[in-house]
Amino acid sequence: MRRLPVFLVIDVSESMAGDNLRSLQEGIERLIQSLRTDPYALETAYLSVIAFAGRARTLTPLVELASFSPPRLPLGSGTSIGAAFDHLMAEIDANVQRSSAQRKGDFKPLVFLMTDGKSTDDVGPPLARWARDYARRVNLVAVGIGAHAALERLSEVTADVLRIETAASSDFRKFIDWISASVSSQSRSIGIGEPARVNLAKVDESVMRKIESIAQATAVDEDFVIVAGRCQKSRLPYLIKYERSGQAVATQDFQIDPVAYDLVGVFAAERDFDALSDPRANVRTINTDYLRGSPGCPHCGAPYAFAACACGQIFCVPGPGSAVCPGCDSEIGMGVAEGGFDVSRARG
Ligand SMILES: [Zn+2]
Ligand SMILES: [Zn+2]
Image (cartoon, rainbow, N blue to C red; front, side, top):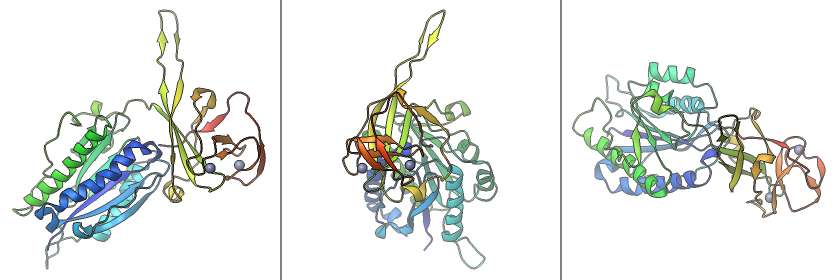
């Protein structure tokens, strides 16, 4: 039996924390339920889920639909699209059977790569390798989630590039249904004979747009600040997310740009956060004067999640007094900060 290998390569960087990741988590479950009702897909489609942030990891190795169970999506720091491609190519080499003189191998694999950001690593060499050795024998569909997804480089290696315009959960469901319909249509068409190109389902223009030009593939400026912290008690990581508010005011004579960021929320990450994160140091910083609103710790409930150590670590404290930094283990007396201080902004 020839298989149709389907790889979902999912961006789990910090900017996905919250609604996007929850929608994707529900989306995978919805996708499986719907594909299992399709006898063609059930017979041929094999599914694998790969997550990437600063690094990439296989969450579910290629498995038939009937025995697939949806993995929990982790979180990590960074958006290494290059690392995701390297990992994907290794997975394809290891798991997809190529045709030989003796037997027919698997059908052309179908890859859905989803990202909401701009790559934080060098995508040049992996994409060149992809274009040279994989582009002809793998159908790649790149999906940008939201306006911040930079799709220029991806549009160099595939003609199938789409962007989801909004992040409303009903739109996300339509997007997942589109993936499901595309897998169904592909598994149906290979029953008749291998098609030259992937048979994607019709795009619902109210939700997604096919990217036709470089201008459309370009990202708009990021409106979020994400700060990574760690619980003093449990040592588990969390992400504090702020959204830009305020508009630049311009007159004929001068322009002021009153930048401020309002708290969106704080999101708990798990132990595997570091394993998926880029170990390189953060380089972008933001002064806390620009951040409005201070959350509590999502792990232990301590009211202050924004305590800072001289080593750069952000962590939670129950209040003033002595604390141990979960980053460098030094003991510090916590007082109330005067004025702002610079903290590292997490990568992609
Ligand atoms: Zn805590
Ligand atoms: Zn420290």
